[in-house]
Amino acid sequence: MDTSLFLARIIGPLFLVVGAGVMLNAKHYATMAHHFLKNSELYYFSGAISLVVGLAIVLNHNLWTPDWRVVITILGWMSILKGVLRILLPKTGAEASERFLNSTWEVKLSSIPILILGAWLTYEGFLA
Image 1 (cartoon, rainbow, N blue to C red):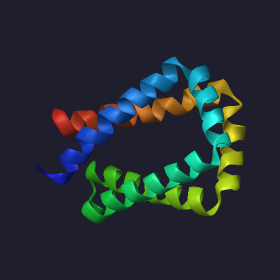
Image 2: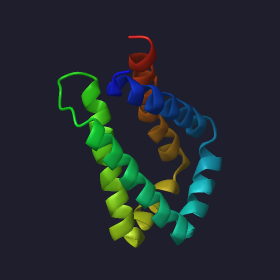
Image 3: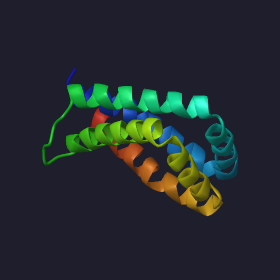
Image 4: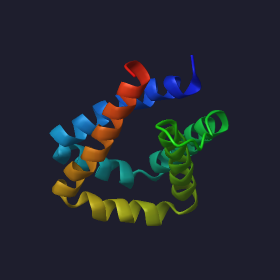
């Protein structure tokens, strides 16, 4: 199977379900995220996981093509950046996230692009 299809089939459904979950349960997800941000060990570990996942994507799929596959590459680089920031600047990242989570409508609004991206990647991975 093509690497792009493989990654779209993993990332698409994940984003689709996460986006829908956040949209339907924004208050619960915000509360859960507040608890997560207070656990510095878990925050650090999530940074390490984001870095590893991003590196795995970029090392296997660093395609800068003018089609849907570039989205997977961009997501890989974003995951690397997120991991690096969580490891190098944990306090700054956690404080910024706390400010964002104080508004339930912002949390709900942020689920829309995740949901759309998940639907699109699911389509590209399974139906296109």
